[in-house]
Image (cartoon, rainbow, N blue to C red; front, side, top):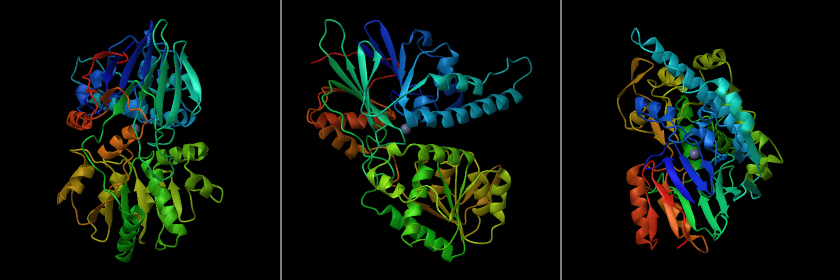
Length: 465
Ligand SMILES: [Zn+2]
């Protein structure tokens, strides 16, 4: 039995880990590569294995760096089961449809700029491929064993990262060999995140494939998120301004809404309206509402009294017309809109309209990659280009860390140390190279002897030591 790392190896995108047991092949994750466009496009189009030879796919969660290439896999001939939790299956519907739209728009854009005689570019996949993929999803409950192949039984355990996120335990029994337990963290969340349950400690593992996104970083600690949020909203509304929050439509938006709702109930929010201006966030919120089985105790108890993701002061904005009307408002308000890194989506219109007004605040609540608009604003650039026009940044800029849904270095370490018998072998994936290598060094200094940071395409035999 062996595992080959075909993506998410020394990078954070394109997760694909191929497990071969006896003569069967199981794919863990099927994520898309992102980053440098031409390179990512090429890698997304070519699978380094024949999708028709796969027996099953097991999916940890719905983020597109883990699930986004599934429709391409199906387009290339895969027609077997895709095991996922029920909430992940529902979120895949929202995220994959959106991803197909982006792929179609992307191809259209490139084809307009194509030189005469050049072959037209086909989208990576289309809505039709998404529709062919969704019926293959097989929802599995948490904490219940299901068969992946006759040799491999699996259990999904809470990962605490996004709604429906799971870690995967794989119990492998190959004929004539000792049983082998392989764990896969997927993306590992953190304790005490709003709404979500805390990550479950896997145990009794022979080997663990572990994410390392923040292998060398620590999140802000001990800060009271709600107090920070309250402060920003208060200061801005006293100036008569608006709070503009770029946020991912799935996960981040719901967490911010949840915190605002708590502040509202505690009488700590000034009397101003709140708008979630994103049709996708609206759909994702519906999925959140459909899956209370994923909530932690606080959210479950609260849910018995009221809808936790909607309240009197909050309005979900659907149409473009309504979205434009928000610009006419003369009163202070809070506007939450995608995308999180302010690279696309309706937030751009709100920023273009509001960033030059000193009364407003741009509130960043998530990771901002280099060369993105959110990053430039965060770095304090005085002039930024939005939708083709230069704008002077006069609005206040604030950042609330601590809303990250990935465990940081110390949390990853605490997770491993919380196991009664830590895994013998570790494969670090899903981290940029410096992060993964730094975390490997930390683990070795903590006494872990077999720590690998696989390169893309590299195979390892799974064996007990
Ligand atoms: Zn994720």
